[in-house]
Image (cartoon, helix red, strand yellow):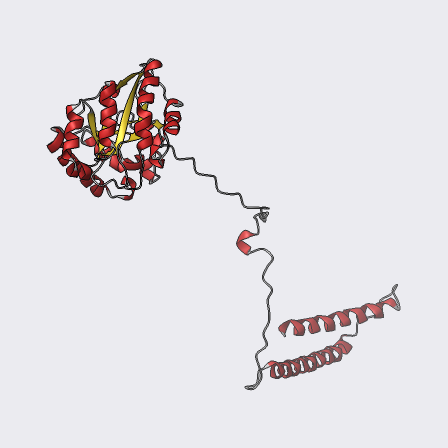
Length: 339
């Protein structure tokens, strides 16, 4: 309001100056003499007009103040303020451009066979690569020798027949025996040893090792070992896992106690109740120098291993014709039979 008052005063002063100028225009050559007496009433008039104008202005200010004041019942006026297009602290920064698509995270590198500490289970081939001295499936390929092995015995039905064929042909083989069956047929165990064959530990009850804890696995090995030691007179160094299944923790346990895990690289598949010719074909079609051949000298009640017994003489003859010597697994791997 003070500003409006100042403007009004300026206007009045300007008006006075303009009127004075206009009076001079009537006779620009000779200016009229100044009548100071007449200036006094004029100044008084201007002062009175200014005073009246200021009073009117003050009255208008009062009326406007009364109008703007909010009554108790009136609602406050809300003034919406639009936010600035760019926040004040970002005014000097360029607006970032949105990316079209977020980039996919980089793929983790594949875990190698040596990184089992991450929890990944190693395959049997990876285990053999990692523990070549403690996990065997064959012997040296440079020497023309092959080892015949027989699992799941002893029993009174097929094991004696297998022993008869081996004896008749002067062949020494390796029998991976179950502790429970060895307890049931101690005389067969003693015959195996007496006739020059090697024995290995095939567990006590034939469980799948990978479904056991390390303690349960260890119990199977130690319990079978006690039986075999009592009947054969030594603690076998060789261990063959049932189904050929073992994990790294179990393998390390066996390694730390002087055992060697022995699987095979030629499978006769005779446990499928195959006939003589099928067993012959499965073995002769895959044997090479250093091979370890899997067969069975016992099985479940429903298994018929007569094909194994019938095929055995022909297998021995054919392998010898090809120049292979038939030896035990300890001889093939050049390991002691006992721990």
